[in-house]
Image (tube, rainbow, N blue to C red; front, top):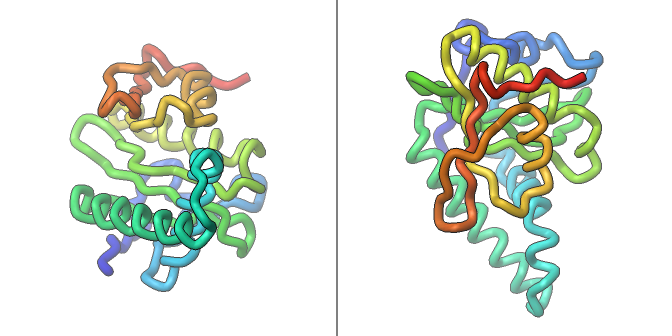
Length: 187
């Protein structure tokens, strides 16, 4: 499996300091994903589908097989479509707590995916990372965009930060964008 390696020079935004070891509250940093992270990445993906699959009357092994298949399809798609993106594991201390996939486009920083394990959500980690991405994009004259499922609980966070719904894809995903005009600095 191919992953884009990054250098300190390439990670030239607020996240570069985190990637280099400067940390949020002395705890949060990044490292590039490796092929041996597959199981962890699959667990993160599964954690984002728990509520959805709770509504399906499938045996646990069928749910597990479905989640594995869906994760691999999504992951392969991201790697093919965004071959030059950054693929990171989010660390809290030495513990892997999430993933961030980020593409630097010519006019926008596209958040391909950002997800934290459930026990690390609602602690300000995601908001901090998003603010760093936003600040760096704005400094480069770019916007920040992300596709978000309309039932994703993080949708409230994106709206609070000033992401605006600009399009809908497959009636499930909102394409959201944050620009200097829409950004809301958290209190």
